[in-house]
Image (tube, rainbow, N blue to C red; front, side, top):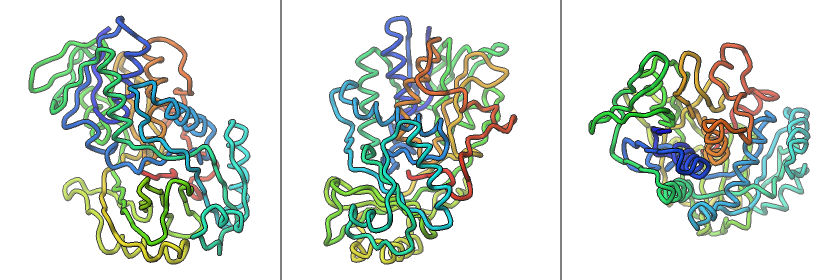
Amino acid sequence: MKVGIVGGGVYGLAVAYYLSEFGGEDVDIVCFERGSLASESTGYSAGIVRHHYTNPVQIETAIRGRELLEEFESVDGGDGGFRQNGYLFLADPDAEAEFRTVVDRQRRAGLEVELLDADEAASLLPALDPEGVSLAAYEPQAGFADPYLVATGFAAGARDNGVEIRTDTPVTDIRLEGERATGIETPEGVEPVDYVVNAAGAWGGELAEMVGVDVPLEWYESKIVVLQSETSYGPDLPTLSDHSRAPDMYLKPEPSGDFIAGGVDRPPVDRSVGLQGVGESFLRAVGERLEGRVPGYADASVVDSWSGIITVTPDSHQIVGVPKGLENVYNVLGGSGHGFKESPAFGESVALDILGRSPRIDLEAYRLSRFETGDGLYGVSAKSYGGGRDE
């Protein structure tokens, strides 16, 4: 079977690796990337690895993703930068009842999670001011990884298994005969294929249009700033997600002792204009949130900043599978700002599914048709928790 994978981000490369690992010599794989590997959404991810979701399916997917990152050395000999520093999620009194329900759901899914009061939360992160915090959840198994190292690790493992990866090779069309894709067209010519995987990230909608499929993906801008404080925020301290006051904010430690902040502002992207970038208003909002929630880091200065595109679906969860009307075009799209941590789980299960084997996670829940049947993955309360975006 000849499989063409479109997209050289962490999703496309994870599928390529696991498909080559499980399929062996029975599968011939070529991966097409319009630029360089991990140069779009993957490269701009914060790299947070956590499990705080409201939907059981997504909780289980995140757990499997983290398990595979723990074992990442088996892919190419590197660790992908994975560090298990824990994850601390803060909630306000208005969300307390739902918060307890969510934590109970996480525990029933097999996640190790502790329910803490405000003072207990502050003991884990000494810079924290617990005022206004009703409850907190702490996940000791959570952590962070390096998205670029994970993506290029999957690429190295895939190449070792015989996968051909073509960078600087945009896909210009998908050839169809009836309901079957037969070839992938690039400026270099047409590559005959038996199967197509659409892992084109922000351009996944455009690729789907080539085969007559409408995929609901909206672009949002994820803004991140790297900060340095006199008080070190090293990987011995947990990642913080503060939903106890608006706007939401997350802080993630870096191995250097610096830390990144994000989540404060994610505006929709006007494609005719492009990304806004990190400006004064974003930095001011981050500074105000630091002063109010973690005054121990209020002296932080800016070291670096960046912004990137996140593609968001109507329920802020991935779209996976072969859509109606097609036989051999498989979508793996819509990370919705939290896709990095789950990419190994999707890569593994999508590969198994394509090979006709049983997936490790429930891929059926992510089918495109769920938006027509009203089966979206909205969890307990989309209003209270949203998509939990942290890339």
